[in-house]
Length: 435
Image 1 (tube, rainbow, N blue to C red):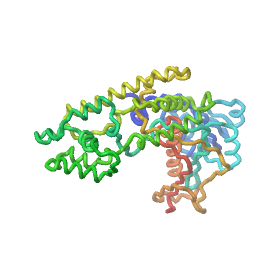
Image 2: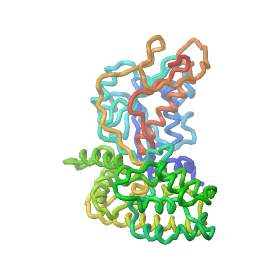
Image 3: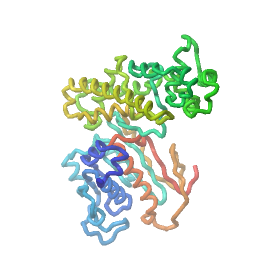
Image 4: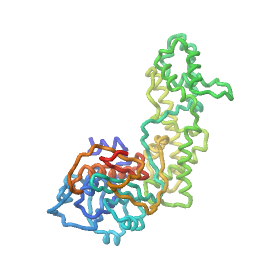
């Protein structure tokens, strides 16, 4: 099993590849701060390609006095393959090195943030810890950030009951529901078949809700109400009324946002973002075709059915997905900028259509917050944990640095891999205040 198998299971092989090619610039005062060490350690464990520590105070490799977790960078990175370079602000500015993302840690002067924001065009994220309190905030996003997979907690299935393609319609129509009910064979069919036959003969102009569908199921199968697939059909009655137009509205809005940014733009800053933008352009073109359905077998839920019938049902989805992927790939190859896009990336993109997302551009507006334990916390999200430390000096509040360090590392990985939805405002951590 590969060393990074667990995280590949979370965000996929392509995202891990992007992560290993990434370069992160971390602006901080010095290496000895626990927050800096925690972030570097976390990114190293995730196998980020390289890290540039841009420090105001550059210490020697062997630190004799240190308020952090490790005495030296080498001791912290033992066994980690990430390349870490330490430099000062002036040297970094003069070199003008390209990076994937810029991070500031425990910088309290807003002028520093303004300077870095103007200096670098990359996405800028900031984190601060003061005593037991911490803040993580997205300062700047130079271009729309396309999210390959938002990983929603729950995704409402769309079963194409209202607009089945020919093969799926033939499958639905191949079942005589009355005969199946009479012969005691109804329990073998998956619930979408039941829903299709319930709503297919609905008179034009009739407006049904899920209760109407449930009532029709009870009327048509009065003696089969305890069948598990009939129970599922009643539970998911609302799926029979979902339409492609309503289900895809958010996808079309996302595509419109991305494609409008592509006008007159030959190259995006983020190369992976640029790849996703090209895929979005092709998708928008194909969605105008009524024959392009893009059902995903990945999104087909488990359901009560005989193994044979469910396998047939799933194979119809898979065959249509393969056909549409081939159609999509042919169109993609007509674009000269798509030569570096692999078929596996295109297929992954298409299988995640209902989980795509986008964050709009975000410009630095001059607002910059640092934790203020004595003042009000004006933040949309506050984490409340039990107070765990009464130590008198700020440098010893390691739990806050650990929490914020883990959080900002997570947000950096989200932005680099285009997996999960990043924080798009401010996240405040305050263990001893209830908000």
